Length: 211
Image (tube, rainbow, N blue to C red; front, top):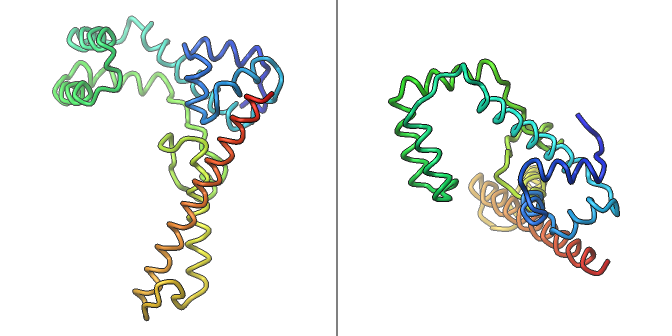
């Protein structure tokens, strides 16, 4: 695991993944100008972004190795499907994914291939943020970087509200009032976390443009 990355390593890694500065910035939740600053050596790449880039490169290397393995069983339908999907630009098309999933359920060749791939090629572990590891919350990639603060903020607000006991916001007596209060406090915490993350993102974008 790398703790830092040079400007040249970042640029080489981005090109190896086939990403533009805009695409990489969107994935990391930062403006493209920030990525350009990193590649120019004007700023240090944060450790959390170094870990993500390292993971993406590891996943790409695994996919390349799998594609080059001629000993794996080949499904003619799957090969034609992949070529057709790439040609049409339907990488994230929902209907295309449903068609693929339906085929996998019935194709013995694809099932055997997937089992061999999982056995021979280790899937890199996604680099969860430290607070996610501590709390045991599987965040994965479902939140952009700027919005990830909403989760711990919601948890903190909810826990603090729980420890305070009697309901104070909803004024509803008993356990129902406490539950409603905790839910409301959690929503407030999530909203504040999103607002803070969005403000940091916008201010960071303005700073890079002004630089």
